[in-house]
Image 1: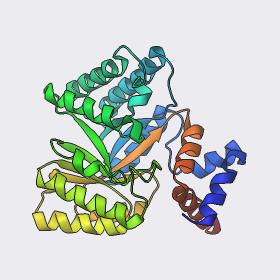
Image 2: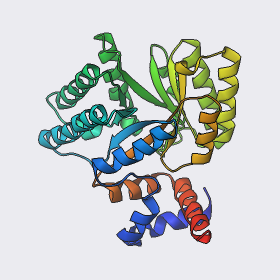
Image 3: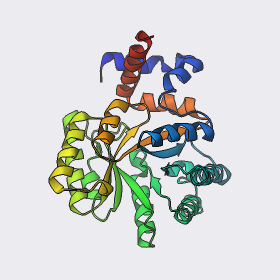
Length: 299
């Protein structure tokens, strides 16, 4: 993390919303479902798949959780109606994970059933370390109940991750954006890469389907070597990237015959999402700033 990255993060709350909107426009589809549809259509036309995420802040009651779930049901209906090559990613805290009474499981089960009827898929996203056990437990219980159109996420940054691999069937593997205490998370960049490589190997060894979610060229190269060495067919894995991040590299992967899925967030909480994501990982703030300056100098 550079001094410039830290400086950018410190001034973020003072940046006008209009400027934040311009900075984030490349990385967020927009405030409405129609915006996500437009972006996914463009991605599909380029031979890329998509994962749609409804942006939402922390919920405080069951009604708000059901409102987020309803938004996802509308996404599934839209994917069907528009014949989009896309699935969804959900965050359990937005669906009531911290509420009592089984609200979260009720909403997740409803979404998984809806997805199954439509031949679609639900990815349960991973949040900060306080939710890791609950997230993996819900995923494992769904799988034990015979649900196979659901996947989960592992974060290589966490020291526990390799031990969480056994029994997982469909995993998005990423470095992890949440900055955690060094007692439970790796801080050195090479240690995180090594954890990613070891976790990828363990997942592939047990036959799991892996969404290789990284923009790190070193890890992309390692994953490509693993795919070639194992002779994996293109339907046995996929690469994943964030909307607007290294799209040229994504194009290269597609031209190389690999499947690529792009994460497409949308919603009215675009401002809160943008600020929080940049504050959680100052390196991204520096990347966005540098990328924005580069684009502006081309005008």
